[in-house]
Amino acid sequence: MNSSHRFALAPLILAALSALTTSAAQALDIAGAHFDDKTSLAGSELQLNGAGVRTKLFFKVYAIGLYLPQRTEGADAVLVSKGPRRIQLVTLRDLTAEQLADAFVEALNANHTDAEMSRLTTRVEHFRATMLSLGKAPEKTVIRLDYLPASGTRLVVDNEQKGSDIVGEDFFQALLRIWLGNAAVQPDIKEKLAGKN
Image (cartoon, rainbow, N blue to C red; front, side):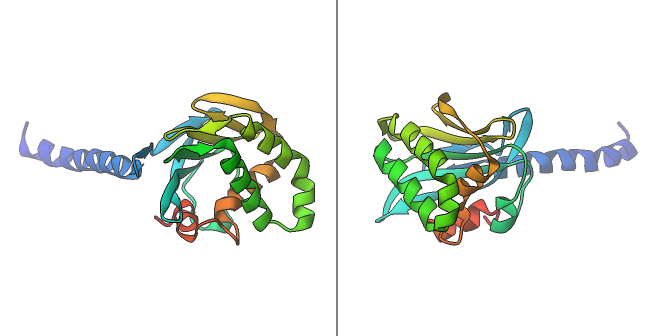
């Protein structure tokens, strides 16, 4: 191969290496939980927008990652994003289903007015009942809250669907506010899920 061909290929090789490095850098391992940089849902490819660790009283509770159709920065922009989306949690300690369900409902109440919660009440009760049916969530349990535009929010635990889909994009947006709302459960998680890693 002559020198002109080598110089012509150099930018292509560098671009390929850069793409590989960028992809590897976006995949995250947090507190022993792995989050791929990309995943698929409802026929769409989703990007990891950010991930963090929920702590309480110095204990690590779960790692959380948010997947969107395209990387988005800013909590408000994430909340109004469209298309399939995924919230993925990996428990970092043994938890009861009641602990998880109660924490979610408490955070939902903190991030919504009474009027907003009244519109969500039936669906929140359905979600809580489905969570309670799990009984427990041992360390390393993978919990996915998937939003599928055609059917709603789906709870998937260790790759097994639990309960029926909960209709309404507003319900999934309400769940997002647990971590991205004005009273988000943890400020650093809000920043990270909002694409500010």
